[in-house]
Image (cartoon, rainbow, N blue to C red; front, side, top):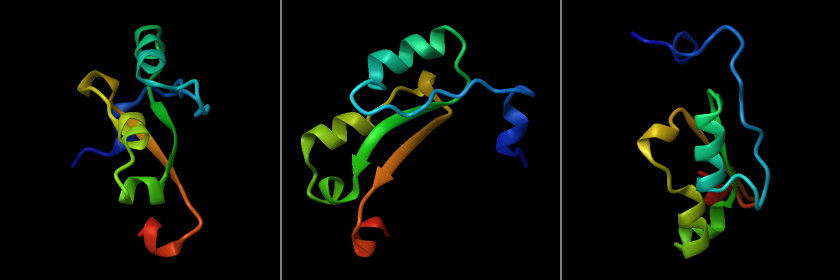
Length: 81
């Protein structure tokens, strides 16, 4: 069984999540220049449940962006689970 940490170098370079900055084109640039792990912008759990287009776009990614963390936030326990 492969463990996530086994896929990374000893000191991985992780892209910090930044709202209105870490969109798909920016993530691609960071990956090209050495980022080992990418993180999306904040995505509202309520907006995901309502299928708000902007949130769906923020969550979209290409295979070459992996490993990728999707940062979901909310204040409603039901929408977060």
